[in-house]
Length: 167
View 1 (cartoon, rainbow, N blue to C red):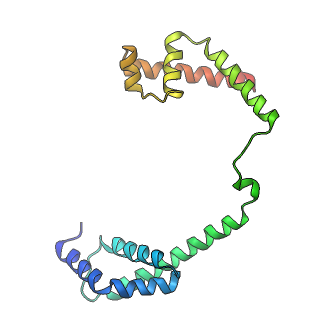
View 2: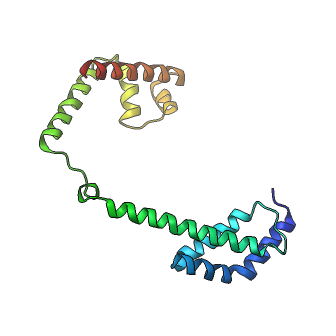
View 3: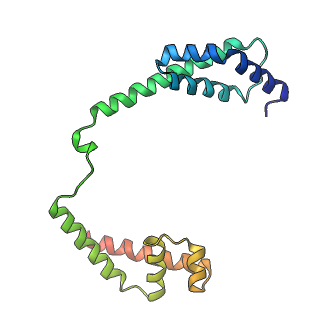
């Protein structure tokens, strides 16, 4: 944990060097907002270290390194975005035959779930469809959380076996 004197030294650096560091970072990044983020990151990064009055060089070097890292990350993101195809950018719409097959698969699963014991089916649907957490399911059904967990294990095992049989 940093001591009070290193925090005050870092605060002093922030007050006296912030503008210069922002200019250094802006020359590297080419963006005022990115430069501001870099300077903030530099101070956060050094906040856990003991900082002395003569550590201005460390602060400058840290800012430069973080600005270069930000630029590299930006270039990687830009290159990745440039390689994206139109199909990757467009929202995925399933072909009619794929949509029909998926719907048939879902209908078959729902029919199979009907074969589960009533409480197991209710626990499974409450959690997976309605996104109700286990403790609330237990409260609604008047059972323990452990019982809900066991019912979910049973339902998930059933679904896994059902899927394996269909494959």
